[in-house]
Image (cartoon, rainbow, N blue to C red; front, side):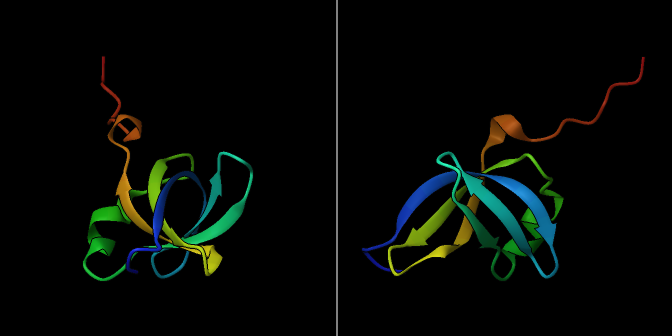
Length: 81
């Protein structure tokens, strides 16, 4: 994606098949986000509500590539008391 690509944060709204997710930007814009190649193993645990960073191009704002998951929103395993 070259020099014209930019990064934005989005919240995952739905999990779709084959490493794709529905996402929503802070301004309410909804788009399809995808994970490429071996990153599918890393992002297999994404859930609805997780915050991710997307890479978008100005040519097609309806599709974005998931780059990273924001760490402070990762799910913790519940502690047993």
